[in-house]
Image (cartoon, rainbow, N blue to C red):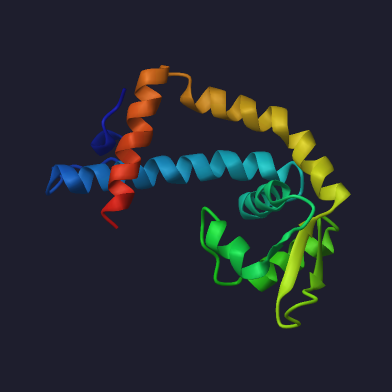
Length: 154
């Protein structure tokens, strides 16, 4: 296992272990995003679009308002309307005005969106397994807990 310093070809020492940990998180995130982007790209969607489809699939047949999608996203996207426009253009979601509040749009996953998620299920599971294969269950639980602690400080 190479050190972060060697991976990024840094000659100087990090100013602190906290700085090194942040660089390690950013480097890991970038690599994971690359792998997810490759996989999602095979289905003509982005990782953010995949995230929206998962959110809407989990919401069920009633769908959810646009702003709630934004709140649930892993990567917050201030351009949520444009993101939803692109997904709707691919016929992966539908949108309709709320009957109780005409200003609110309710988004639902379409049958085509469900099909894309279904097709991606096994490759996504395989990617997860491959990326995390070096960690046993206890280490995974520790990693999840440590990351939660980091987020609680933000």
